[in-house]
Image (cartoon, rainbow, N blue to C red; front, side, top):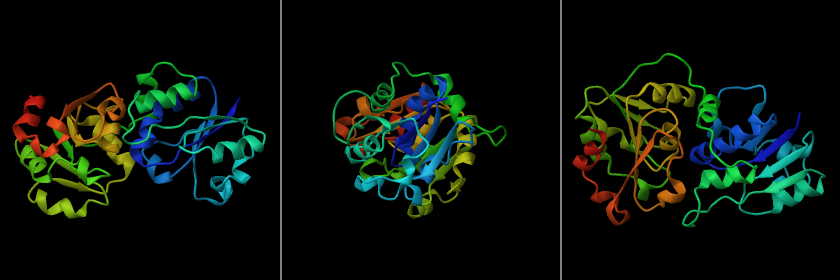
Amino acid sequence: MIRTLVVRLGALGDAVLTLPALAHLLARGDTVTVLGLPASWAFLPRRDRLRIEDADGPRSRGLFSGAASDATSGFDRAVVMLGNVSVADALTRAGIATTHVSPIKPGEAGEHAALRLLRGVGGTSVDAEAVRALIAPDPGGEEYDLVLHPGSGGKHKRWPADRFAALARRFRSPLILLGPAEEELTPVFDGLNVAQAWPMRQVVSLLAKAHAFVGNDSGVSHLASWLCPTLALFGPTDPKVWAPAGPRGNLLVAPEGDLSRLTVDDVAGRLA
């Protein structure tokens, strides 16, 4: 059994974009350790052949400055998904067969980000069933006819929150999903059902039973596209590179990349 180290930093969206590559590694029999930020991977269940290790932990000290590290021990090969090569060089010097896969940077044109990562580990096509099995939603949970996530890592990528609220009020059982960094949006949704800072495994179960999802260009939208009918609202980012990769994802791209030009009727019309 090949023991593979995957070095992949970043937020939730970066983690979800990596899923096709991880599914490919697991399908060919590797045991995989992801060196990353644990909070970004909290949506995954525990698995025997896939573990997440904290990139800020003691085993990885020195690795990100290009030095040797305890993080190199016990692996047959490594895949480094970072923009710079210093970590890959350090792993190679430690005697590990290492592949460097440079992720697409924001603003960079080209192939879809998930496909670049998948190709970097030898894959050629996305196995949607394997990715959903990797996410493995827990059974149970409440059903909502529409789940809305008005947040995003960048405010320039957000459709106005009051329009999310107006859209929600057109549905019988909507739920507004807010992350821990989005408390300032809470007053906009007064009178609506709001889920604030839910654990990510609970979010996975929620999305798996949702009749539809609407969100911005965000990690939650990327995750939703594997679990339920998803409408992602795109403004300034390039959907050819950053669109949700899941088979249930759909896009509504704002005119000239300006999300303020999308009306509630525009979005509701795509959900009809």
